[in-house]
Image 1 (tube, one colour):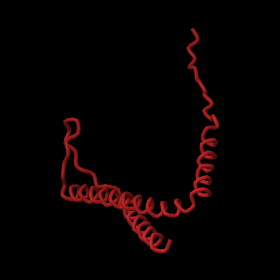
Image 2 (tube, one colour; image 1 turned 90 degrees about the vertical axis):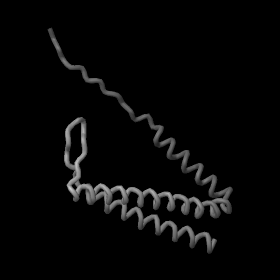
Image 3 (tube, one colour; image 1 turned 90 degrees about the horizontal axis):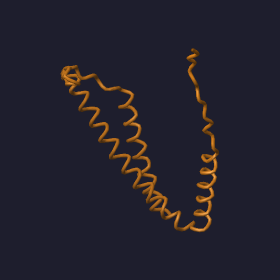
Image 4 (cartoon, helix red, strand yellow; image 1 turned 180 degrees about the vertical axis):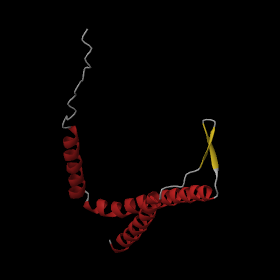
Length: 119
């Protein structure tokens, strides 16, 4: 008998990604042209809201990172599927990423407040 493995290849490029990008850009241009005043008032508000959400989530993730690091340095253990394993130290790259997100969100908050004051 001939037992060959069959390999099925699907072409997944439908072009909807490009069409969606074009539609979103057209919608943004439409909003900018017809609702310029509304867009100018709405942009700083959205920037402020998104920056605050980013700041809160980054501080929470950094707090979780520090909590895990404290347990790892204390020699804590965790039970995984009935096996007791030591808690591994968290990755320092994740800490740097969250600190960078905090500074970015603070810059976004400052920019949004300046735009609200001077626009």
